[in-house]
Image (cartoon, rainbow, N blue to C red; front, side, top):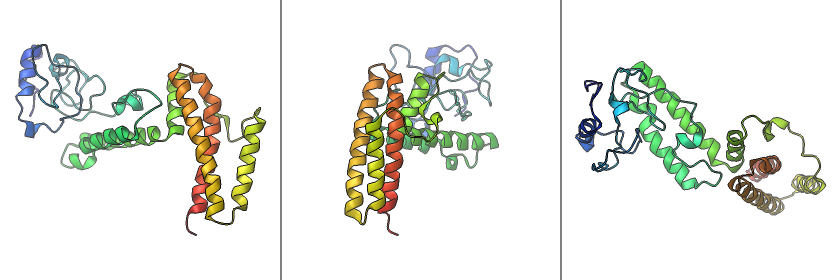
Length: 260
C-alpha cells in the first residue's frame, strides 16, 4: 500500500484513518514501531502504530525513495511509502532493540526482540525488492545481530554501556591484556586457578575450577549491575577489567571440557 499520494499537508486525523484502514493481512510491519501514538479518541488498531503527520507528509526530505520526513527512532520503515531505510548507527543497541538502557536485561526479552526484528528485516524478505532495499536489509539485519551479540553477554554489555555512560574516557578493554595491578588477592586467585586448570587430570578437576570461575563471574556481574543502577559507572571499570579475565578463564575451562 503506497501512501505517497497523500497531500503534504494532510491532517493527522485523516492520515491515521488512511493507515488504520489498511487490512491487517496487508500490514507486514505490524509490531514494528513507527513514530508516535494516535491522536486522542482513536484506538491503537491492534499492533499497528500511529504513523504521525510528520511521517506521512511528503517533500520534507528524509526517505531515500519518496522524500518523506525522517522517521524518529526506533522506526525502520518509511511511514509514507513503507520503504526500508538505511541502518542508523547513531542509535545505541538498546534503542535499536527497543530495550531500556540498563545493565540488567532479560535474556528472554532480548532474544524475543531480536527474533521479532529479524522476521521483518531479514534479507530473504527483500529478495524481489530494489537493490537499495536489499542492501539496507543486509545492513539492518547485520546490525540487529551485532546489537544482540553485544547485549547478550554481561561483559560485552557492561563495556558497551560504560562507553555510552562515559564516552570521553578510556575503557577497560583499551588497557591491554595485563592483569590489573594493585589487587594481590585477585592476582593470587587467578594464578591459582590457572595452575589448577593446567594440572587438571579429568572432568572432575576441571569442574571444580569451573564452579569457582562461574561463582566469581556471578558476583562481579551483580556488583557491576549495582554500580550502574546507583549512578556510579566509573566504579564498574575495575570490576569489568576483572570480569574480562574471569571470562577468558571460563572460555579456557570450556575448551578443556570439549572432547578431544
